[in-house]
Length: 270
Image 1: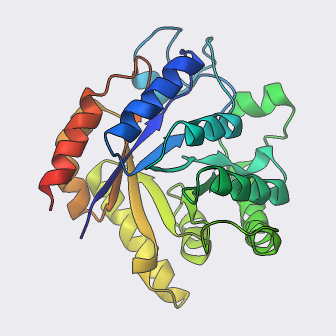
Image 2: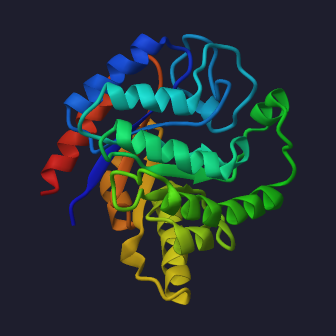
């Protein structure tokens, strides 16, 4: 099995120049994928603060931040190798037909490197300050389930069609009864989190949903987002848990030492 690796650049507490320099640096190192997140405010840390535990329990921090889809377009224009997507886009923020059209357009801009990442949404401050109805977690999941077929249908109707025969859809989240079933029904990639034992358990549940729906589980690529330095020492454990694509979350300052470590590990896998 060929392991893939990627980098999620956190578009907060930095300049656009710094984000695009990091994009070019990571793409030049030949990471397999590049990602941004889809939020309107920083998720952790005060301005200039390094990546910390605040990302796990977000609070309304102050600081610079950039919008996701326009940023991803700029990243596409400053890269040539890696696939590009959001890890993950928020279903609540945009009309699903528009999301399909933006993904198709990004696929043309990037010459066939787009991934359509999507999830149900969770960061309440974004909703409150931008005027979206936050509702409930089950309600947001229901909306995601409603919109995924609409996205797929619109992608099939667009002219010109995407460069790729099919833009892969990534769904993020670990909800065992609903989210993972949506992954089994609609997605080509699933993104989960550690620790490895938790990832392994979710992975098995996703396999079962695929079997229940008559789908080959191998059709869904398993990705995991690693955010803590110690998780870079657990890469072999994540692979044993079923990970096929490991993505490093990287905040400002965008040091590439962790990226290099991840790439060195990938290249030893054969």
